[in-house]
Each structure stands twice: as C-alpha cells, then as structure tokens.
Image (cartoon, rainbow, N blue to C red):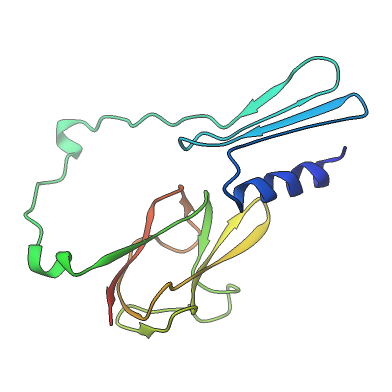
Length: 158
C-alpha cells in the first residue's frame, strides 16, 4: 500500500460520516479513526505504528497582552450567522495569487457560490454558501492556517 492509497482512504473517511475505518491486506494493516477534533492514522506491517496529530494547548496571555473587554452590539450580531471551516487546512480567498477574491465584504452571494478554498493535504476544497447571504466580515486572512470549526465568515441571511 503506498501513500496515495492511504491519502485516498483518509479523504474517503473525512468526506463521510465514518468515524473509524480498518483495512488489512497482504500482511499490512491500516486503521483510521476520527472524532473529537483528534484524527489518528495507524499503519502496521509487523509492529503497530501510530501517527497522531498533536493537540495544541491554549497559551495563557500575560496581563499586558489581554485586550480590553467590549460589549458586543447584540442586535447587530444576533442576526449574523457563522460560516465555519469543515476541515483543517489553509484558507485561500482567490483561486490564484493573481486572481480577484471570490467574495468581498458587503457582497451578496447566492446559494452554492464559492466563498473561498481550504487546502488540505494538497487538495483544494471549495467552501460554498449554503444559502443566499451578505458577507459582513471575513474573519481569516488569505493563506492563513485554520482549524476545524473555526469561523471563516460572518454573514447576514438575505
């Protein structure tokens, strides 16, 4: 089994509701598990070997780095919806560095319109609008790493 086969198995697991997958073939064994934001892949020929994504613990900020607490504008933010990342990767706001961004703040987008791309393991995943909405805020800068569930856009349903 080569790395392409393993990558395609990982992609299959992440694109479905499968939380655990195990395959044994020709003396090789691969097991893929996911859930609770920790994904692990193990691949064994003779001895089990586990590859696991490291968990990043939050770092406490010093008193001088803590931003002042502000009261959110409740009526404004109550109507806003979050569009979050379905995967861990790198966000790109345009199809190429020379191209214009897919969306801009204030733009009304239609259901199914591409908002950005999230690159994961050299695969480009288009993030589309699930409903007609207006882009209120772009929360992540271009070419920044993002986590699963992280807010990418704040939108107002139209």
